[in-house]
Image 1 (tube, helix red, strand yellow):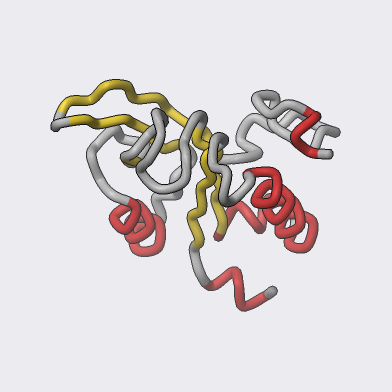
Image 2: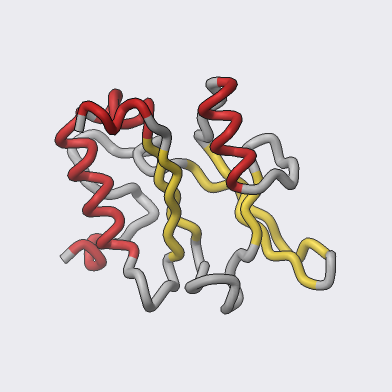
Length: 131
């Protein structure tokens, strides 16, 4: 895993995604953090759980992801800024855009940014989903 630290990975899951259940991604994040340590893992890996997002752009959840400055910068721009400029994405804006109009937008924190010490899930995640 030492080579992993040379790269930057940004991942997200939708809480309403029936194809890729977010508890599986959450488990992966926890395994990376256990292996590298939370602080070292945060240097190269960020995971975001997007409330209500379905698989792809379907469903009623967000269909656009912007950077933490609120610009309409896509994921490639966000990763490039992290890798080249050292600007790590601690938050993203998950938005729903229909016919060019923003229906809603919400800030989403990276997993573990609001982690309660001693708990393995953020407060927004029900314990039942982790069984």
